[in-house]
Image (cartoon, rainbow, N blue to C red; front, side, top):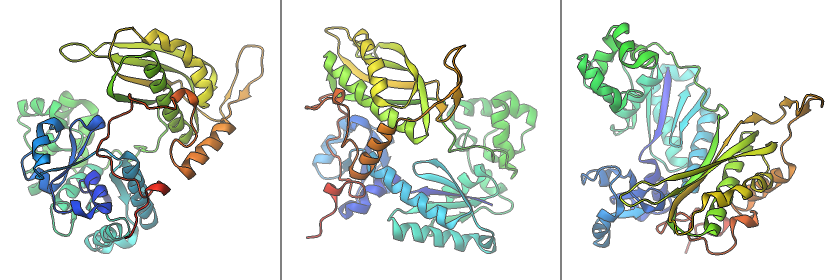
Length: 415
């Protein structure tokens, strides 16, 4: 049996843990630059406001006190997620984190006697220790566990165990809502008279493969109760690492482009070091505004002298290419960096035909810098090229809450 633990309206729930005045009110968390709604409380959903609604369309309802909005507090959400995963690792045999608010779990054999009671205890512990309400679903496969979790979140106890014969449940679920199917395949499924999850489960393999190939066939197989994606590695090393942001306001100077790229390079390099990997090079890019929407993207490829995880070495290699991204009189909306050619630290490699193989090494300097920033707060030590003054290009988050779990200067104060 496989379980899925999913935080209910996770971003909103994180905000409510430290601001109890938000409980019971229609709350939405906004995307980057306070653009649109990306997470909604149940009260917000009940008003019929769809996901992705632009914030500017709802400002008047905020002023009247009807709605409440928060900027995305990624640092807080990531730490709350880490705390939940830590609890799960103590309680179950294995945890496979699927996203910031979802994790598949493999319960201990003692849970088999009563999965419902076990799920209730697990959910209660997370709620008591972290403050996040979760849905918990149990089923023989991950695809079915997704369905069970969806049902559990709507129940008072928050837990649901899929019955041995889930036919009546699958018959009421549209095929397009099955995990891994989506809207793109839904029209093709309807053309073959596959309307529900039950229809998909029972369809001939040849028909399923003709619509969505082996991936859709795996989904159908899991709907039949046969696990077939157990080898999926959610903690696998990435093929590339990137960082990009839309600007809080348009950038029109070379300094703004340079500072933003330096900042994003430093952030991406930190991600790279967490995986104990080195990069052989990167693509840097800048996206412009264009009248009528969209924009042109200017890209340059940079190869490092040797694979590295050191931010200063990366910035030295990138710096000469940055002016090629800048066009005077142009308004820029976004920049970013993508590392490629990744390899694990310690990999043996030969620099040229006549030199012996050498072992790739991590930067001891940035190992120390990462440790300092982890202890004293993100960005305490940074490169001067990231800018030391006011950064107008930084992402706009005018409604940002405090980060009391990761910042000493933002701890909650009892009055």
